[in-house]
Image 1 (cartoon, rainbow over the protein chains, first blue to last red):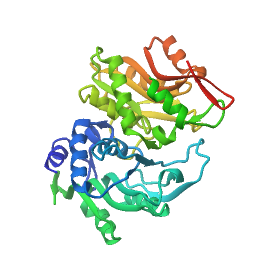
Image 2 (cartoon, helix red, strand yellow):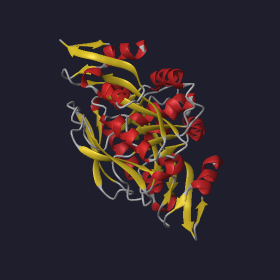
Image 3 (cartoon, rainbow over the protein chains, first blue to last red):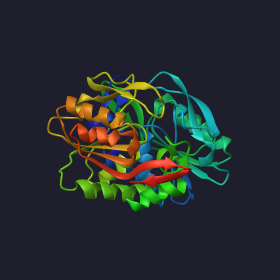
Length: 190
Length: 190
């Protein structure tokens, strides 16, 4: 997706060969107009797959998943939580997840009410590194015996192996902007 | 906003006189079509206020803020974080916040890059109890010397005093569904 790649080049901040920050439009400040184009592109890739639900992880996946829902005729968005709220007294699915950015381990949690056997799930991950978050979301869907139709990595750092790992597990992974490498202060896409 | 009130009556789960859960459409599963109506209503109330930015708090404020942005000609959404990511190495504003739902205290954090003196900020709080989150967001905006044009409480439990406290501090607060009390397993609106 050229618009997104250009935006990453223009506004991404390269911290190291492992980290590029996209806070100014994706992870803290949100460019919703860009998200409309991302939503359209996601729909374009999965429009024939009878998606019934979009699954993502709090927090930064929520905005893109929300806009994407518009293009899938407003299918529900469900987001997994990184901590169990006091008010969650019902049964839930849980999957241990390692955060690349924060360096900690947490349980991704979703109420059993919101995933079912008949669901055809599209997983949206805003920024894929080692694929831990997406893998964990797929795990939650599998616990519910839902079908995982596919996984979207809006941006991925390809060289960190997330999408390859998920494809090897049999998942369809669609990436909108796949970073090949970060070198000499420049970002190279695949 | 009658559509929202009816939805709370239909799908809200009363846990106690203090807590009604709206996870099925607002806090874990998201009804984006409903959010479009909420976005329109928010715009209707603030359309003449030259809003330049929408400020909310992760996680559950993000989806509504994102849809609301569409109706304000795609002004940027900024969300405060409840923990500092490893990758945040720039300066940030911080405000101590007490969570009603989770019973803990955290620092709401936003990078200094995303709020400025010239910003006219609309704060969106998805579910107001004692008003701690909105107060904290207003505090972040004030640290940046931004103008807080108003605060939206999508749902509020009026009897917990959040909106009254904020109005006493001089803020304009607009509530879309204001719960007067929860009694005998029923929800009463103001």
